Image 1 (cartoon, rainbow, N blue to C red):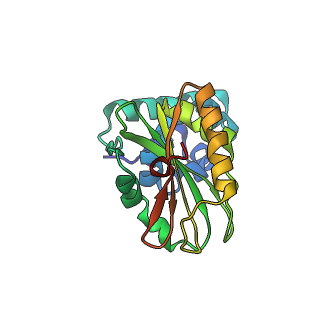
Image 2: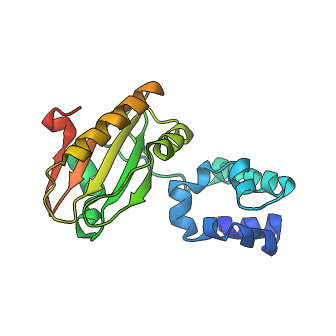
Length: 196
């Protein structure tokens, strides 16, 4: 069975497919998390013509309908489940800020790494996160980030950012279900702490 990249080359030709080369990197992982949500406008932004962008969007639409590669929807009902899913962050030397998008049954629709920061901060773009939340048609969001220091105790900035996310989500009829801060084999859940 052809990969998505091969389908793009077949439909668009190799020169047009090269224009969206950054979309083609790690196709299997990207497809599972975000490629399936791309629309015509995304392809236009990568320099494709209107005709090429229409064909590229049709490839995505077709692949979404017939592919067995749709993401397995993981239940995220407890902070422990979220921690287990993102435990790899404990080894990172920079802060990574991830937003998880869930349906009404707390099943993971997908997630997006919003930012990578330095040793003690990862500025998160709320507008970018909400843009993806709308694409995923999410009901709820779970925020996840790591503290490279190993101490998961939330900072004032973490609490302030969570409240800002909650306000933005509320405007879109979504809710922040939790915010996990991951340290060395331990985590802090804002939900459990009563911060939400």
